[in-house]
Length: 387
Image (cartoon, rainbow, N blue to C red; front, side, top):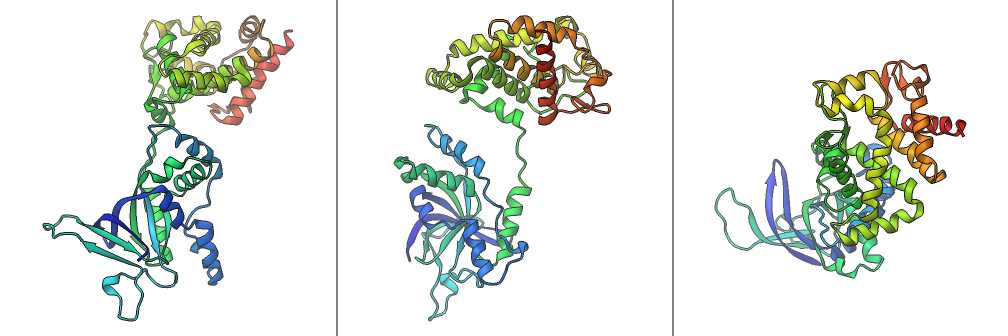
């Protein structure tokens, strides 16, 4: 046997599995990625898309995961690995079931007897010919592999939780991938941001939520949308996006260095914190009269504004932040005056025909990327016409 690790044997339904941990350095040596596995199936004549074992790797996700692994408190959840035999037309062979002339792919030796219903602890031995296929976790494994190649040698010795499942047939792997992903419910981006305690941009958005009076106690930290009856005026996701747009406009290429400084100071936000609160104040000021009932905590005031105007919607917040950020970058001495004059000149009622096919489709506000950009460009174009 080529590799051994301490595990606990368990069973769910018909699936026998082993839970334990592996060093990243050892794991990446034994891993076979989906594109390699699928190529083997094609070589066997199984070219149908229905025989693919995994989705394609989303390469855009990898750089952020590699960076995350450099954080001192990084933590990845367990990856699920299939124990692959050399011959994919046959199941992985358990030593306990192997004949005298058969080479086993794996063997589990129980350390000591346990009571009924309890997991069996022991040692799992893998033959030198088996490979491990990620039924769940290929992006995390790819990130770890790249981080190690880029010089993160300590990571190679760190342990990652693993669930090892013996291979039976291709459709078992496909179904396991579907079960792991379809039955999991990812949290909304708003919830994820609300629980983030590391990202400088998130810390700045939370700072805005505390320091800007309109947002204090009125930020939705649970979902990415606001209901008709919600007293909240903005979601954490929208506040984060708007904060990023404003700071990009104010600091340009220097923003990354400023954010690293925030990260180093940990609890201090420095110039960024003061600047972003000031910019959010500038953004809100032209609408101060409309927001007065909300600040006075009148029942239904926030929902009534969303019923009437475009600006209180997620699209409105993000478009205004993008537009103000662009004006700050292009007109650093005159942006405040230019922004206020422009916003005052725009009819923000949802009945304004200028919003159709830009901020709205029929009676619906388009809270989409293209809709936000089109609305931001509209505001900036209007501003330039006043020069």
